[in-house]
Length: 407
Image 1 (cartoon, helix red, strand yellow):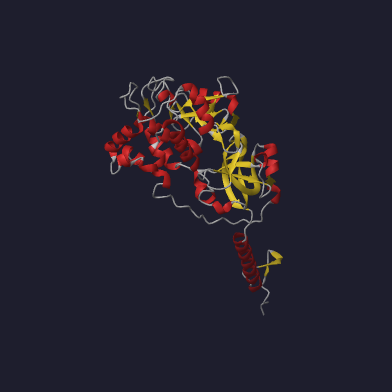
Image 2: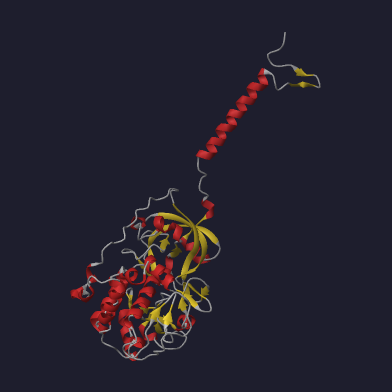
């Protein structure tokens, strides 16, 4: 009678044939166990590797290499020494700290948010993230001239889950100050070229100031809200003493966003002194920008975090790109060659020392990605009420850019 345990293999007396009932049962059991283990490995997330996480303090201390940093979201950096905790201007960056109540920027890590992560992790779209503990992974290095993380590749809640984005709807109507005192009544109902011409006739009525007066005006229009004794430089976002204005290394000076040579107007009263495109900037960054057009790409600019340049173009940091575009659009409408100065025009190329400035397609993209914020609107108001009595219409009515230059 055959054994139910299976027959011995004649070549190997102690080995039973795999075809036996015992062997078949064993193989089946093993297969089931392996399948269950595999399923468990797939369904159960790997535990967090606590050893791979570092604190914000450690990240600030080393500020190099690729790391995963755990910290509380405490606000959005807008300058080297400024982190806002409400009314966030965009979704481009956040600041984390080891304490949810941290108020010193020296103990915060500034984190760049790439475009792919902005809808889920930007504070403008997700203000409820403030006070939440998160893990961020990326390359540690200077950002906003502060200890930071750039090239960020991953975001996660410290619990391991991912927040559900709660996007803030973009306003479809202008803010309440869009037509102060009926200022824009003369252009009502106009579009395209007719709007362009009507806006020119409106904003070329202005009080002009001298180039020396610009120094004092910028100390008001660009004062650092976190330190009334300082100004915030435009491209670099550095807070500097108001008294440090001048032309030497370590000073800030008067940057013409529309370069003087692109129209040959120099510092003459008019386009050379128009506050709507004059901003404080460090001497070194002002020199690097020079008279270059605006475009994307290039090499990193020393002293200007997230700024890039090449031989003929300059790209500012994300948080002021829209400001740049709207200043250029203002100049192109304000100066039409009927007041003794060149007819300034924006076009879609990189120009030399001409009356043109580009690139239009890039500037329109910047205008869309960085809409006017409270600080930009306040500056427009101060120039209107205190100095020039004219306004930048593209801050009050961003939709007019599309009406004049297309989408």
